Length: 95
Image 1 (cartoon, rainbow, N blue to C red):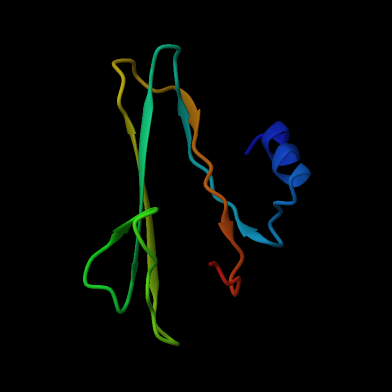
Image 2 (image 1 turned 135 degrees about the vertical axis):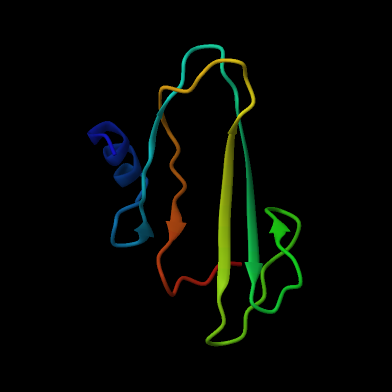
């Protein structure tokens, strides 16, 4: 993660102390477009739930799966593209 991005995230209160930070670098040339779909599924859920369509359910000791699919919806090859998804720290209650 570049210093500029890390500084921007720190500036809004996001640090490795309160979020899980991961990275993977790609390259995006001008003219591309990116699509993403976030899906969550708790151990009590029959199927995954697309972000915004509900909440995941898990009993104590259960698990919640979190998947982000990012796709190139344009016609140009990705180069040096960075996708950052900030997750709450472990133990944070989300409503």
